[in-house]
Length: 202
Image 1 (cartoon, rainbow, N blue to C red):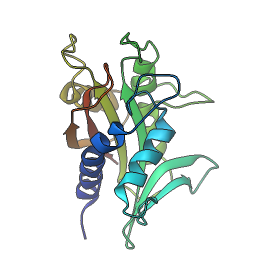
Image 2 (image 1 turned 135 degrees about the vertical axis):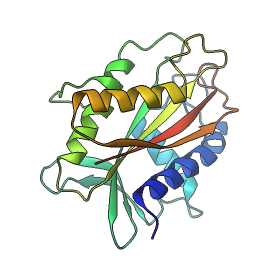
Image 3 (image 1 turned 90 degrees about the horizontal axis):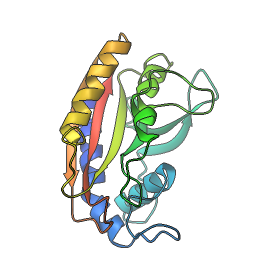
Image 4 (image 1 turned 90 degrees about the vertical axis):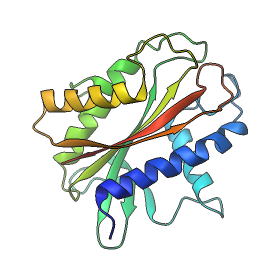
């Protein structure tokens, strides 16, 4: 049976493999064409649909699964039959449709402070590891980057490294980056390439 690290790494690579195809036909009624501008839930839905030949979510992946000990919901749960791997996913999209930096994105990824109506990827890690789900758990980041990005810090590898550092700084949680699965050739002028980043936490 594959380890959780392998499972999450495979899922990240599967996502990265289909994102260019999904992007090629993605049309937003408000923003420029391409997958990048879509909201997180819609992107997950489109990517998961593309992973299955019959256009449905793969049978081993469940969406919006309730936490065992609360009414909150987990984005994805990978079910191998012998164990489950709960995964919270977030968009890592630092630029808006017009190319400007999104002032809210940093907070939605790196804020360690829980909020009633939303959570960051950082607090998702804490939420997963404190839950009654099986451990370890997974985090998945769908990262977009424009060609010629002037900020060296906005690179997939740097984001993965910073996230590990912040988890270790704020929480008593073990974390490992298990995948940085890259994709490119996207049609949006500011979301032209990127990576699906996977972390395992426990």
